[in-house]
Length: 328
Image (cartoon, rainbow, N blue to C red; front, side, top):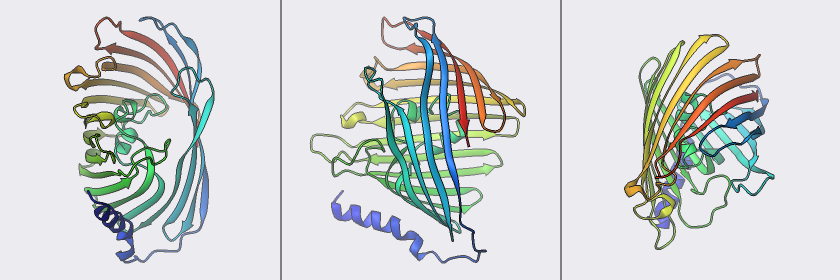
């Protein structure tokens, strides 16, 4: 894709809202709210060579969102977590969101360091992000935020389309090549509580000798006042921009409300790689747990987890967690 084509696509996406006629609406009073979310846990592994026991402050989000009026809003969020390097015991912080959004009628436009659209719906439907990331986030099929622009259009109550153009490195890394990441999503709501999500993405390598990454995802779910059930299938071609390094897998999950403060949930994941190139990390994983709401801002979720590696000679791993959430 030529640079000229890239600029044309980016310009079209950025300027869509400028051609949309403003609809009659009452003036919106400026107002803001703080964003505070803290994920912590107590965990213990008791088989497969994992004997670690301890407390963990997994992640904290701190930010602020302010509605300027007339459909405009700004949001800034810091992500405070731990390094992926197991030898690094220090906390690290990133800017996850620094965005401006505009919503008018059926349109919503966002620009800056924005939330991506690749698995946003699946994460919300799963509903227990502080316990475990959704499939694509957990297994690094894409990033939850990136620098760029996005647009969404709600055709009616049953059909929505969204598109995004971002750098492709995610929010923790700066742009290092000429490639961009393009995504297009379709959301169908054929009946109350029933949702279907289709997504396709192309992440350009921007370098000779490296292949473009292609992502495809399909999700279907049903949610009522009493229970929810969902399933997703995902495939990524040329992981890490290397030809033939394809990954694919599915996730099935369900939850049920026992009362206003108590829920139970379960999930099963299956991650595979083409010709077993990533067999050392391929696995099946299951989680079973409950959630208790302890007031307006606090949740507690004890759960049991099992990981079944596909590599020869590796034992299954079992662990117990008590995940805690504080947020408003």
